[in-house]
Picture 1 (cartoon, rainbow over the protein chains, first blue to last red):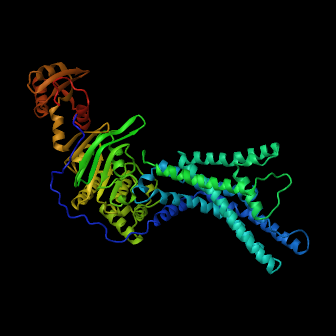
Picture 2: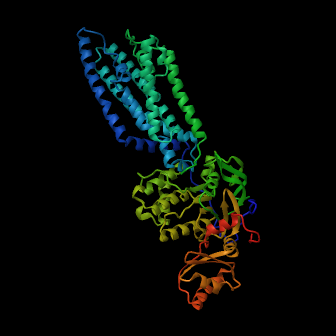
Picture 3: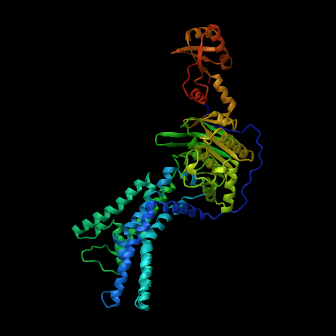
Length: 297
Length: 312
């Protein structure tokens, strides 16, 4: 068998007509992630389930808009308090948009990386001057944006209504402040729900597996944590429940006191846990992508 | 400086070695990478385009390491064997999207994509969805994306798979044209004649190693040097064997049901002699085949343990 040390020199005549490097300008490297994000956004927004979730999120908002309007009328008549807590209920309760936002993230982000692995799209992306960071940002943005649309859209709509039904100028300024809080809670929810699903997608071989894993990680700590918290009369069993942390932050932002039966973790603990979830997901994604190789396909 | 240079490169998947201590230098021109499925061709190509990290050794393409080097990829074209998921896009949109990822402006991306579709004779279908393309059309769309940015080095992994004869001619013309303009082309295939149509310079790979290299005609000659089998199906195999066995170009004869297997080191003389012997012995031949007149037999010949005295 011949030794694998080779020197292959073409023997035929090569009529080198002089390869010339492209002399024009290139777009900014930052443009790459926009291209990846735009394509994924188009594909995600075409999914029937994502469209369904976007449509569904309008209904709780409409019901709460009616309640907010009625409450504002009662308040004007001197009955009850101002309608200031709509944001909490809309964002953080299962009958609000919380579950719809979770499902939007699930459907929009489940295939973010897993689909590319399965279909061999990596081999085309990474045959171009696209860095792993460009790819990561491009893949994170669409699920976060779509989740933000579902989590913040209705909340902002209610906030505008709240401003519109303000009693006076001072109440109007207060209502405008609530609008900012609603926007902030929406962003937190979109990040906490949209980023982990993309990280899970990078670890799974299929979209379904990523979605199943995400569903389990979101729902089980929520249900079990709540049940164990009731039994133990301690809030700490809910440490791994993302919905619980959103409720804690929601109550804090909208200055809503806990109900007597509710056991809530300290705000700092919930804020830290959500930060860990988001940062950990990004770190996991970076690690997975840094090592990504195109082995099959 | 060589365009491509590897030094003791190795890559394995678990217990399976895909590329085994491979050192080579490739200069400007077209080089064919030949080998059966599983020989390590695709793994080597993926290492060269930076999609696989070598576990051992050094790789240089255009003087730079390809792994983790996105700027180098602007100078490289890659047509993978398998397809990505772009079914929902038209062929033109697909190539434009890939051009934009290279950093070309929208106008330049469109111009280059249209030009490639014209050159690959696919302009009539460029506005159809890739999902509606035939295998050969998909292959050409994939080729278009690999060439549209005018790379210095082009890697084509089984580029003619699924192409009809006309499309093959077109693709080969485009590749030759690129090479004439100075692009270095590394093309892999497991079909010898596909490579022969492009270049005479080949690397033969087997089990992750290069087992032969150089001029394609020298490799072809190997087929004729080693004992060559001809299977003759006929009504009276023993009569035919008796007529052939005295000829000096016949090394050995053996029998299978309804057939005689003739081994020869001189196929050029043996092939015409068989019908002649059959005519004289009044034997009726129903089929005449050569089980090893192909690339697989060369690989088998180069890689298998050979009996004492066999030509190396």
